[in-house]
Amino acid sequence: MDQLITQLGRLANTPQEQALIAATVKALDDRYGLSRKIEREPGVEDIIKQLFGRLIKAYGELSRIKGQRILDIACGSNTSQAPSFVYIDTPFGEKKIKIPKVEGYTAQFEPWFCRTLLELEAQPVGVDLGDLEAEAFEHYPVDLGQVGALDFLPDRSFDAVQDSRLFGSPEFTAQFPERDDRHRIAQEIVRQEQRVLKEGGVVIHSDAGP
Image (tube, rainbow, N blue to C red):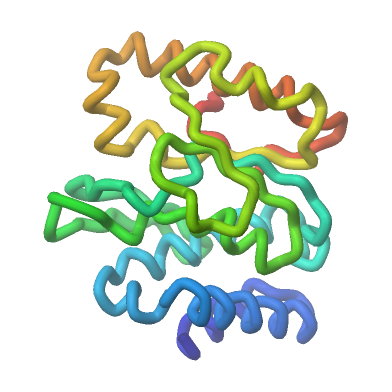
């Protein structure tokens, strides 16, 4: 954890931001066993780096995230299955992470983004078809393959949105092997992101976008 905190601390502009990063990483370890999961699956560390990098790029300072209502589409779950590899773009470079065991659960697709936002005192909302029952953040079971699946979310109700890694998940590609279907779903997600985002809101990251 100390090495991860030190590396992430290089992204901060002030000692206060460095302290906030350290406190957040330690909280993720205390609550969700982050260090144990990194030891078992080294790719989890790169996921954490990616998420912190995206937040800092979008907001400049992590302290600005407090109170923000943020939607994470395809947030991940506690029943996510492992693909053969994932691409991760971190502030320290892009990596292709091979997953040695491609059967069964992986910690890399747990809802780390919403968990991190919660520790930063934001108001995360996660949507995913997997199991999120034990999570402390607001969450909804949603089949993102259905047009209108996010219509229940009010217009202009989020300060920021993100979608990430839905299109690379093994469950999604198995359900929608045809490229045209995946393109249709991407268009629907972009439409929904534009609809629910407040005026002047932030798109933190979107795999569905151009």
